[in-house]
Image (tube, rainbow, N blue to C red; front, side):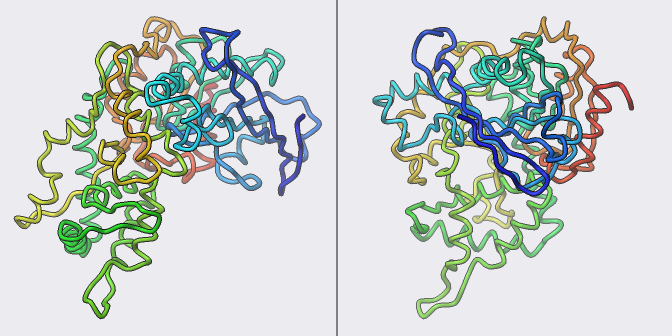
Length: 433
């Protein structure tokens, strides 16, 4: 039974769908998916085309908007919008340390999670589309990993898409995880260098915090162990439009003077815990590298292995000299499954996923080269999370896709630049620009 309710300017309806856990076995086990339908209050009784929104991640449920926030206001001018919690996220069969033991041990859990990649998400979308649109194709808006899913959608089931809109999410069609991270570390270093140029006082602040962590065992509220590597991973913020400023504010409140001397402040520790914990999105850590698996090569903790090729990210070496401590970016490492209480019970499961060698291709280059779906994508020139060169190569490989390359926004441009970003892309896809 669907439940409808209101927020300012919109009518919301909770939607629930049943889909196969394994689409290769349609008569086997099923899971329940959740999505939130949104329509403008003054259009609630109208027949409108549908827009499906695929969230970034992997591992995050769809945005929980209030009213017409961000890009949603522009979308509601002409669409009914379906905000889908992709499988394993939000209210759609969430995969966490609490739920995964229902599947069995680590081997069973890893086999289960292997079905939570873009190909399964696309088949979920195709399974629910007839129930939502009556069989009509819909416009798909994919942000970041949602864009990866959209390219998979164009590969597997382009007949289901009326228009494809991709924001910061054009993946390489061929790159192994090693290639992805080998391209990523120099981008991250450039972001850190730019941050220190903006806030030069943060060079010494970061060195002091890193030095403190190398000499102390710091356990944050809730049991998270704050190692120097975990501290460096706060650089994930630098890929957002306001991330450099938020990192600066975090660092300036790091220490307080106590009877025992300088200690990391409770305020700093609490903020760091909220930023570092994967309790709200453990699937992100579990399958992050698996989204790049497409052949018989294991991902094998690619970010950790490739980091060794960039010794400038070694905090101890930086502190031994006068180099700045470099933050890291969107990378997942084995030590995270030791430091984070939300991930510790899943360490063996993560190891099995990292060793897996039976990944299926996610993209069909031949089908993309023959694409007939109107498509547009924004490529953020200074994107820390998705490599610009990889994105532009893929843009060239998708027939008819119109790219918009800009350095006006960071990776979160769909939020920070809304509604301009969505409006521009819809115009590009319709060849109105």
